[in-house]
Image 1 (cartoon, rainbow, N blue to C red):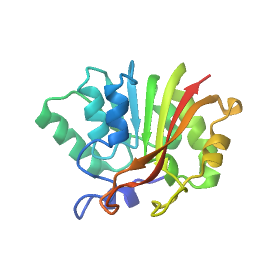
Image 2: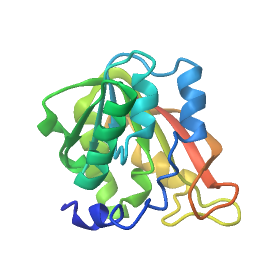
Image 3: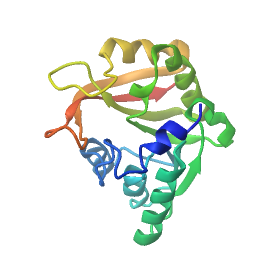
Image 4: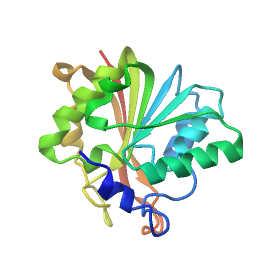
Amino acid sequence: MTGLPWDASYHDGPAPWDIGRPQPAILRLAFQGRFAGTVLDAGCGTGENALLIASLGLPVVGIDVAETALAMARKKAGERRIEVEFVVADAFHLERLGRRFETVLDCGLFHTCDADEQAAYVASLASVTDHDGTLYVLCFSDEGPDTGPHPVSEKELRAAFTPGSGWNIVAIEADRIQTTFHHVGAPAWLATIKRI
């Protein structure tokens, strides 16, 4: 998968999902101490969530296919004097990173996968997540008015992350994703998933 369509999203001002700060749901997780060990931010965009987590003293790798977004993230990291490793990588081939992570964050990436891509993406996540590691997925929900693009049902989440694919869902909670086009955010799911 090429990053060109995603990269173009950052050329004429902020992408609709780039709110210039961490997502409130990720802030809550961070301040509850839910991130541990080395953290992967899959689909990190301009890096706001990765920078937040790294500011807590954790080693963080942020990956994306959009090189323009990663350049913006690196610039922010330098200006804020926060150490984060931002890498161009394909989320469907995370094993190519040659690393493993205790915590993985997917904020807005899972819901971009078509149904036939989800199994490959879930397997890719499993290939880099430590056993008993934690994955947090924040994705658009199909419940409620004013849903975001590509909303996901709770059933779809549960079907993707099964013991057969190496995962155990701990919790799926209703939440919100802030965007530049939703006044109060869009309905979302925040899933806590353990690698088995």
